Length: 162
Image 1 (cartoon, rainbow, N blue to C red):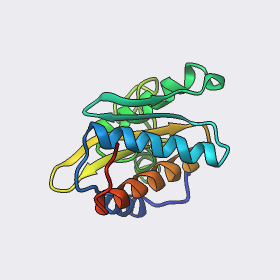
Image 2 (cartoon, one colour):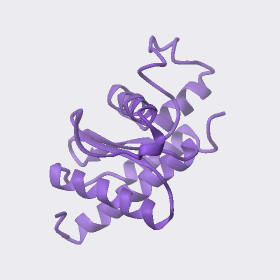
Image 3 (spheres, helix red, strand yellow):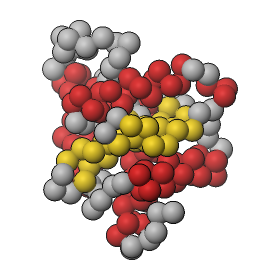
C-alpha cells in the first residue's frame, strides 16, 4: 500500500481543488505559494508547475541534484497521461494489484507515488500540473493540495496573482 488515502477519497479531493481559471500568472503564483510555504516550514522542495506540458514555474534545490527533476517529470507524466494525481494513480495500481508494466508504462517515465496533482479548471478539465519532491511522497501530495487550495481561495477573493 503506497498511502493511507483511498482512490475514491483522492478523486473527491481532486474535485474539491477545481479552480475557476488557470493561466501563466496563476501558475507562477502557485509555484510561489509552494516555495514560500516550504521556506516558512523549513522544507527543501523542488517544485514544478506547468500548463499543457509547458513549464511555467520551476524551483530546484541544489542539494537534491538532477534526480529531483527526473522525479518531477515522472510524476507529471503520470498526471498528464491519466488525468489524476500521481498518488491516486498509485492507489489505482494498488487496488488492482497491478503495476506500471501492466499499464504498458516504463518506470523511468511514470510513477505511482505522490507529489504531482492535476490542475483542473471548472468546465475545462485538466490543464496543468503542480508537483513537488523532497519529502515522503504522501506528504509531497498533501503539500501540493494545500497550495492549490490556497490559490483557489485567492482566486475566489479576486486576488491579483502577480
